[in-house]
Image (cartoon, rainbow over all chains, first blue to last red; front, side, top):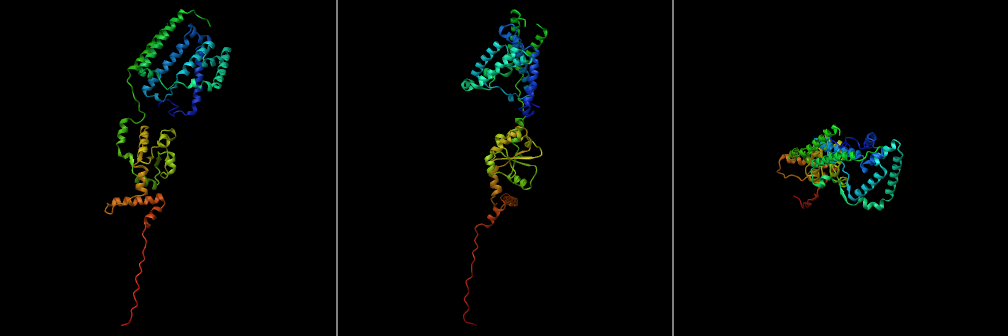
Length: 197
Length: 204
């Protein structure tokens, strides 16, 4: 059996929403147990007193990366069939800035705000309401921003291809960067005044 | 810091180094290039138009004719009982079941050999078996089955038998009209009347 399971036709396409629901529930549970429903913990990354978010997501990324690459090497998954999100350079930069501003101002990202709503946090509910207003504004104003949205399309590029590195070398570099980041953020956390929340 | 973190960090690093050291490995879920080459050189991947005609006439249940030309060509003319799977759609999952049915003899055809050959290679890479190409395609079908040319009178018996078969097949596929046309030809019967002999005058 070779993955990815849905594109290879091993699992029918009708199941993808069911699988998404199950993964979503597991993801929500893990986020909440890790304390990610607290906006103070999440915003800590911007103030330097808590880098848990960075470490958790970076760990998740490199674990998934190493896992996928080894699965690909063993022939358990066909990496060429994995969907790679296409890059729209300007849209990514603008979107990143907006997202970052929203994150630092509201203390949540979209996923964690849902976690906050689930445990009844009022700030998370307001944040989620704002998110839907934002979606509405974006949809209505789409004709105006379509130019930015679709400009500088690079296609489904991967960083290692742009840098001209092999997948393995890039993976090792990313692991080293991740480990260094973990080490440095620990030092910063120890130096910055503890915030109780 | 917790000791477990250091162990995990070293473990990740080792995995990363492993990814650099490991050579690139190609995985072929499909037929390997070597197998493909040997299949390509095997003449049994072709099947003659005569054999196809024979199987159609015999109503061979294992025969699965696949027209790989586009839909318009298929609607225009195709072999009796053929399925239309245009080349662009040959790898779609809709066809997997019918094409991977082991007991059937799948015969691909197009106008010439080219499209059918491309489809054959694609299906072979997908590890389908029993895939054949109708040699010469529909062009050859017209030349040999629909409008067979008669062999020279001095030909071997086999050739004459083959011609007889082809003519029979032609009648089968065209519904008999071809034979009638061939038989009638443009022969006109010229009735020659004998000149009346004059009445013998006089007597003995």
